[in-house]
Amino acid sequence: MQEYSTLRIRQDDQRIMTAAIDAPPMNLIGPALVRDLVGFLDALEADDEVAVLVLESADPDYFVPHVDLTKVAEYTAEAAKAGGPEDASLGMLWRKLSQVPVVTIAKLRGRARGAGSELALACDMRFAARENAVLGQPEVGFGAPPGAGGVQHLARLLGRGRAMEALLGAADFDADEAERYGWINRALPDAELDDFVADLARRIASFPADAVRATKAVVNELTLAPADAYRADAKRFRHFVASDVVQARIATLFGQGLQTRGDLERDLGGRIGSL
Image 1 (tube, rainbow, N blue to C red):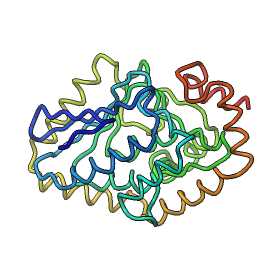
Image 2 (cartoon, rainbow, N blue to C red; image 1 turned 135 degrees about the vertical axis):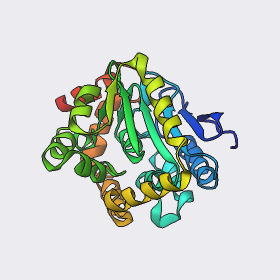
Image 3 (spheres, helix red, strand yellow; image 1 turned 90 degrees about the horizontal axis):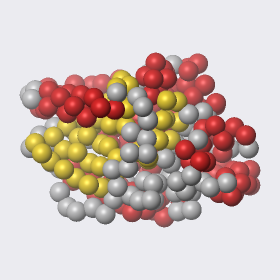
Image 4 (cartoon, rainbow, N blue to C red; image 1 turned 90 degrees about the vertical axis):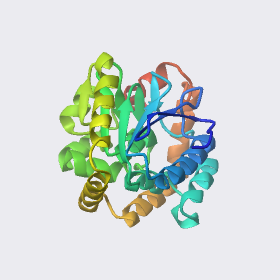
C-alpha cells in the first residue's frame, strides 16, 4: 500500500487491514480524502491477501461528519477518477467500496452524518460505540435529498416507515437507536468495541477466502441497489444543492458555526430543525 495524506493504513495481520480516516480538522469529505479513497480502493481490489478491512476514524469525535460544502466541485472531480465523468459522485465511489471482494467493517466513534453515514452504510457491517456514536442523514433539513446511497441503503435496512423517519426527520440517532432500527449491526460499550471488531475480523479472515468472497457477492446481488439508482440519486442531489433554498440554508448554518468543532456540529441534527 502507498502512503496517503488522509488515511492511516495499518496491517497487523496479513489478512486484516485497518484504515483510519485522519483528515483534520474534523474529517470532512474533501478532495484530498476522496483522492486517497479512490487510490486506496484501487489498491484494495488488486490485493489478493487481504480478507477484511476495518474502517475507523483517528478522531474520536468525528467519524466523518459530512462533505466539505465549500469544495463540492473539487471532491466530485476526484471521485470521477474512480469510474469516469458519468460516475463522478460519492455514491458511485461508495458503491465501489461495497463491491470490493474484501469484507468491510465500519467501526464508528463520533459523528457519522450525511455522506459520512453513507460511507459507513456502504461497508458490509457497522459497529458503533454506545457512548459517543451519532448517525444522521441531515440532507432534507438542508433542502436536498441524500445523494450518496443513503436512500438506497436505509430503505432496505430499516424498512419503509423507519427509513422515512430517518431521512425526512433529518435527526440524529444515537448508537442504541441506530441498532434498534437496523442502521448498524450492534451498539457496544466503547471499551469493548475494538476487541469485538478485532475478534470478528480474525474469525472471518480465518475462513476459506473463496467461500467468504462468494457469499459476499451473493448477498450484494440480493441487497445492493443497481448502479443506475446511485447515479439518479447523485443527479437529484446536485440539482437540489444548486438551488437558492439550499444555498440560503447552508449560508445560515455557516453563520452559526457549520464545519467548525463547535456546538452546531455537535448537535447538527437538533439545530437543523430550528432553521
